[in-house]
Length: 178
Image 1: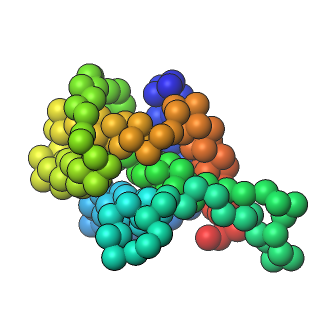
Image 2 (image 1 turned 30 degrees about the horizontal axis):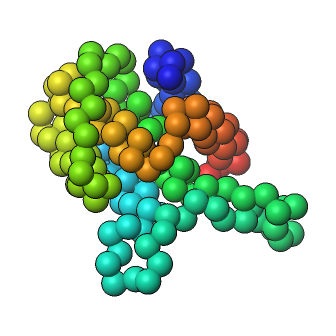
């Protein structure tokens, strides 16, 4: 995974968003980015479904038909779980840029017993980052994020491609006033 390229790609999008949606007086956007990351992580967990002990369907949502205004598109599918995971990556990179942590010192990759614990550990790491905002805490978020991705079965090639695909969509959204 080329982190430098990911950070640079995210920087271009962040600069564009900042230009087209400037901060209001006294607006502290970092808190909004952290909340956005938590929301996206919850959406990712929702697509994973493994925590839904009350449901007979605990299988991850990994294939959904691509639809347009005119209906489905030639049997194409998309992976909602991967899309939500990559939405988290956008905010993790953006937070790193905001904090001027554009590198990862060390990813320890502390394994988890199960995916539920991986989600909970990442939620906790993000909450700690919101309070402390140190390079170590940022690295911890990134580490927990990588572990979660591995537990969800994603390769870094899949993640990178999905990130760049979603980045293009995010630029299109800016073009259309999303």
